[in-house]
Amino acid sequence: MTTTSPSTDTTPRVWIGCLACYNAGRLVGDWFDATTADEVTTYDVHGAHSRADSHDELWVFDHENIPVRGEMDPLTAAAWGRCLAEVDERLRPALCVWVESGDYVAESTGDLPSISDFEERYQGHWDTFAEYAENLADDIGLLAGVPEEIARYFDWRAWSRDLAFDYSTYDDPEGGVFVFRDL
Image 1 (spheres, rainbow, N blue to C red):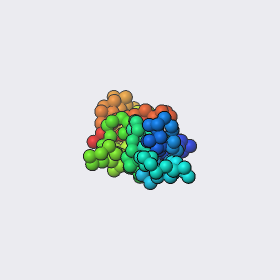
Image 2: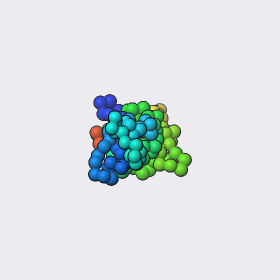
Image 3: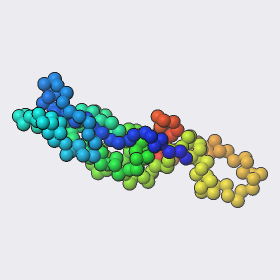
């Protein structure tokens, strides 16, 4: 089993801007940590030049390391940031791929993923599904007690192919696959 490169930055960030300024053709805003997006104020965006008149609505115009497309309000961005922060940094790429696949389990009625379901289903990052299958066979003792003369005739390719019906795999852009057990 391999892990995602620790040098890959997985911190969810959002670019929050003033909606009134944007509608007037000006980009006024900055990058913030997504976990605290709901705490960003107009002063944080405008600084000392804060404008009280009709410049009180903030909006997330861009984001990084959040597995959804498009703009969102700061409350939604903060909810995504906090959800992603619940997962170990090394597991965030797998969680994001799971959500982007559309096959994820959402928490309650929203779009946020169920972290407990993610942790139950995620089987790790592997070079190939076949590598995962061979490791699983060793872990469960699939051929334990079978004489070597017979075990060498075991059809690993067919067993891996059949096993794959109970799993979902998603390519990692960095190489390898993320393996999830289908429940």
